[in-house]
Length: 287
Ligand code: PAF
Image (cartoon, rainbow, N blue to C red; front, top):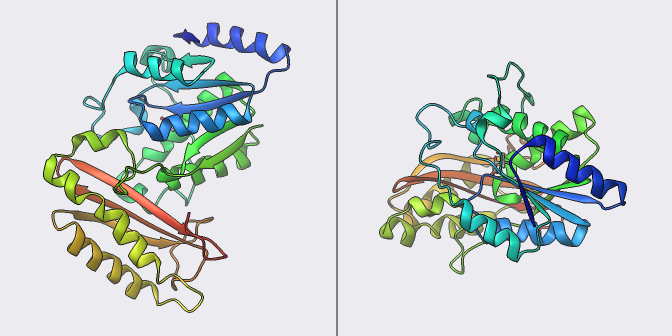
């Protein structure tokens, strides 16, 4: 495995592989790798000849007062994990390499980024789209792999790639959960013991409310009330940021809890803002 700090050296390396006909898969991350990231790497290894993992805490996707400074950084452990997983190349640039001058260009996907997490994190998805565009242009992968836990992010990136004709396939991969159901996240380490005890209740609440998403499902407000009741019961210390029932493709709010439907939440618990979601697909399967 090779580690690159500069765009030029990474591009030279990848050009060599490409000329040999090797397909490239990209797993973009902000480091602090956990099993969720490793599952993306494993999927990328199945699908592509070589895997590039980027480790970059992207300043432009953090708002004022968010956790950019304190975001967990663990490069040595991340490199060891990538090596164990058979990653071909890690791209771990400094901020100055990615943003040598304050960027005047930003990628904005209208509509999809305003609701859900976008409402309490204005500008966040512009920052994500900008850095993902840069990474796609630097790595030129055939496929890039995103987790369903950040469902809104993954859909926005898919739409950006369609609208701007990036020659890449964006693959959504299943959320990886702890044994008790808590969705894996680098931010779970912010949870104190009591919050960690309650946190799995978020997924349990989604699953219980999700049972009501059926062809004859209830109106939106009734479903969201069920969900908030479940959260109050299972995660009493949680403060709801948002609960949303939306079309999984357009992310537009749904008026009736009928499949296909995305049921998503963000809840503040202890020191963390946790997000999670389920999608009930056309056939009633829960993703
Ligand atoms: O999901 C993340 O870790 C980040 O938003 C991403 C996609 C790596 C862009 O910085």
